[in-house]
Length: 276
Image 1: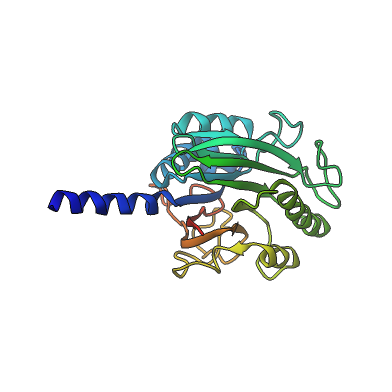
Image 2: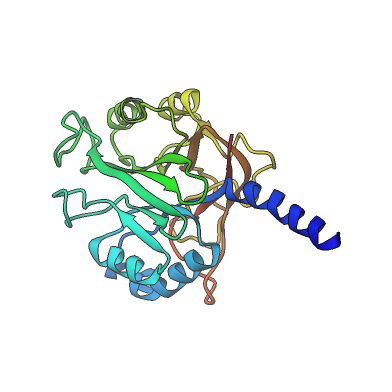
């Protein structure tokens, strides 16, 4: 009888665990030798160690150059990646790539669009300083069969018009792609705090996990450090937005390297979600 009760308890728990997934958004800072002790060559082992420790089911990275994409692909053995370089739609320039745990999820569809007036080809939009992209993937849970969309982007750091129009475009693309009303995740470095019009627009249509979670957010209130370890991060410009998911916990990760420097100039944002 005790064995039967234990078996039933285990069976009851498994479906609940299967409904959860972890998500991370992480601007890893592009590889620049001029960053000195914060250059990618020095940070790379720490970034990979952090990612393999938290092992998010879905990971949206920003500012990943082709060489960094190769390092991430090699270092994240349980993950596959989608995305393209923003400058040619292949392997030139920064990626806003999505890594997903291929042991748990099967890719059903994927793509990339540019945050511009011509989203189907490499282009710079409105008053942006650089080409900007949003990559996306439709994933299917191998056990439950549940499907969901993940989108990942990096909004421009200069163009006010570009950021607002990009937010509108992303919402339009989500609506156009998500014809079957699957749950949605949107990760990214938005280069905006949550009191700005583009973030308010996104928050009207999606849930900011920092604001909508079962537990209060854990960690610092800001995500951008500029590698400065002497001052607290106060600007929260990195987000995880969702639709069709509940949020169990949200954390801004301020882990340091052994030399007490940060792995990147942004803190990773990590959330545990559950299907509603």
